[in-house]
Image (cartoon, rainbow over all chains, first blue to last red; front, side):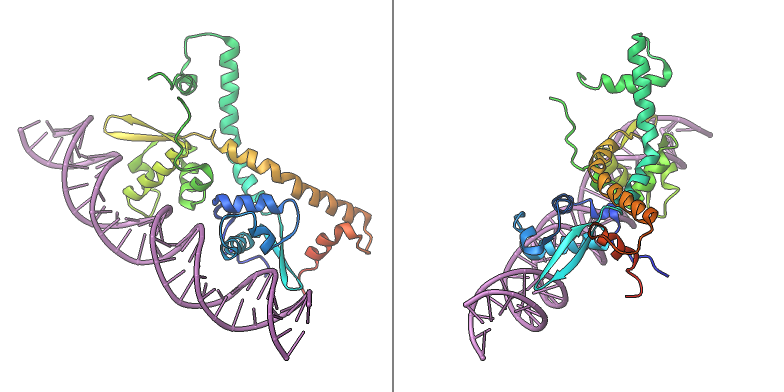
Amino acid sequence: MAAEPAKHDVFQAIADPTRRSLLRLLSEGEMPVTAISRHYPMTRTAVSKHLRILADAGLVKERKVGRETRYRMEAEPLQELKRWLAYYERFWENKLAALKRYVESDEEGGEPGLSAIAEQRESRTE
Amino acid sequence: MAAEPAKHDVFQAIADPTRRSLLRLLSEGEMPVTAISRHYPMTRTAVSKHLRILADAGLVKERKVGRETRYRMEAEPLQELKRWLAYYERFWENKLAALKRYVESDEEGGEPGLSAIAEQRESRTE
DNA sequence: ATTATACGAAACCAAATGGTTTCGTGTCAA
DNA sequence: TTGACACGAAACCATTTGGTTTCGTATAAT
């Protein structure tokens, strides 16, 4: 019972720059298709298809008002992205913490655990 | 001077489920290509191409050791995703806060500002 | 009633994507 | 030195993607 079919997932939906832009635009409020498409250098139909993909991912909802279809953003599905990301945060946080220790100790001899960071900081100049 | 060419961006890189899985796998540690590809129902070459795309986005780094190429994860570029996401968090947080107020007040008459939530909670059974 | 507007569906197209097989090269092992 | 192993490059292929134009239909305006 329940649950959307979700033919397109959130990761795929936000992969396209135009769709990310659409999301941003709609975050300012509901808007009908023609008004939306005025912001883009492509046909209304193309924009409409992007909106469909966003809708499949649950990131926008449509509402018919007279002869127009108004779209609005739905941010909730982005929580999945946030959860996914949470797993990886510790990795860059560890590295930042290590870097901080390294800088504060201001020693030059690179301890083994920090080699990756040292390498990164030197990656310029051959 | 400086700055990666970044032919592939992070959003596109993580759009593919296989690549997300690769990232997860490599988060456990450095691994050579053949070992990596044993986890997937596709050829080593295919995996190699996914790794290339991840590398283009800066999400993995390679290191040659003897005849093998070992890959490791680099989480930092995911910070871009985090920053992107930060903009949208307030939207679902607002909604959650509104829902909380709604539930706690346990009134039945829907105030105008909460119509979207009411609608959402009733969306079944027409 | 007629015309104009707003939109989606359909058919179509070029390019990108995700995969394959085949082959060449560098490196380790006998 | 002769294999065997690890890998990437290249050529190729089917499907998906991002876009177009054309058309039909519902609603609003005259």
